[in-house]
Length: 323
Image (cartoon, rainbow, N blue to C red; front, side):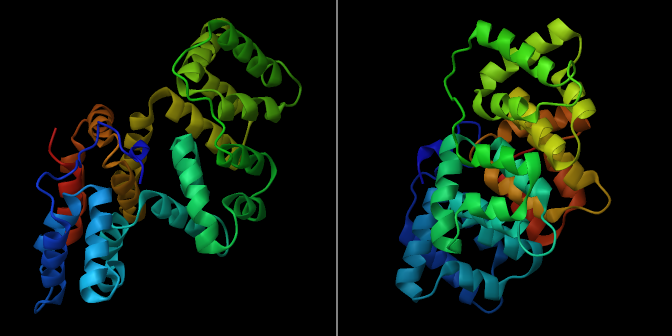
């Protein structure tokens, strides 16, 4: 997987002195022994980069004639199994599976759709689109179209097209104009021009959007979030708010989601696993810092007090340290 899937603020890095054959052998022994050696599995799979895990899985298949993920599935169970299997999927396939699962069956898990579509880069979204069709014989766009509706669908399709500007330069004039456009499309109007919101929020770069939000706040004495909340509703509102949060501070967005997953009524392990796995090589160090600010305790201690057993141990390894 291309390096665009990794950032320099991850807790998991390339393991130096890496030897795929040796790791595959150790993993095989951990699985095949009398009872599973979970500690060895955790040590290896949480301390290798995703691209290294792919090589371990290839070596494993060559040596055992079986897919590592299938052996993990038959040998482990529950949240620990889900976490270990998630770690050995390529990131794009992992996201594709989450999206597909979110859109499957009765009712759609919109919060998962929103989280992934709002937070990923163009490259990530293109990669997800590329693996989606071969696996599900339906494009991501078609899947979104058949499972969602209205402005929510329209905005998701915009995001799926991965056409967000990703340059770092900020255009002051454009920020003023966009702030004006958003105000005129929402607060100033009887009824809301949702298309304008979709265009600005789904196409402008994150640095550009931050400038626009400042401009909006200064000119109209209202935050863009307040306006979206008063003008929109439902999943469409949730998606726009998520984009605003990601554009403003992506690690803070994930810290907030982790806090809800851990501190809500009963732990939401599914969300906990998804975020820890998908951000471990990108910005988990920053997410940890934001978590501490938000919750007044470290992410490490929150995970420690809220999870247990092999699942908890593996998450703590991914977390990488206490703050």
